Length: 165
Image 1 (tube, rainbow, N blue to C red):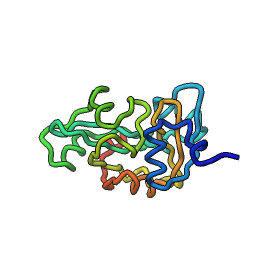
Image 2: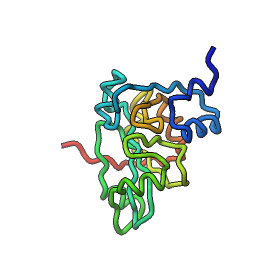
Image 3: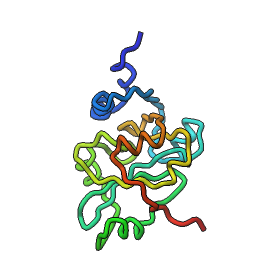
């Protein structure tokens, strides 16, 4: 018999606590090899890379902001800047990512962070029935309906992906 705690045992403890707080019962999949990149995660899961949701931290005028983006796309920093009305938007370094979220790059989940951060969710993630995201470590992922994922993350839907060539 497995309990809810057993089901979330492979997740990062901070993320497992967030799942309990949100009343979410999701299966956490653990992989022996790291799934730090969207491609590594898609290969391990057996899904398309676009079904992976990347949780990326940027700094907008020095203030951290989380951008949720599908794994096949890149964030257009200029669109993020315009969306936020910021002077400058840059990619946050590893130290800022850990301080803001409580997680290391490659394992940042879309919610369950150490601090409350503004969240922008690219509309493209809604194109899928199910999406996969990190569960707090580079070895763990979970699946969720994309609308529920955006809702639990407190995200605002925006168009911030780089245009396709």
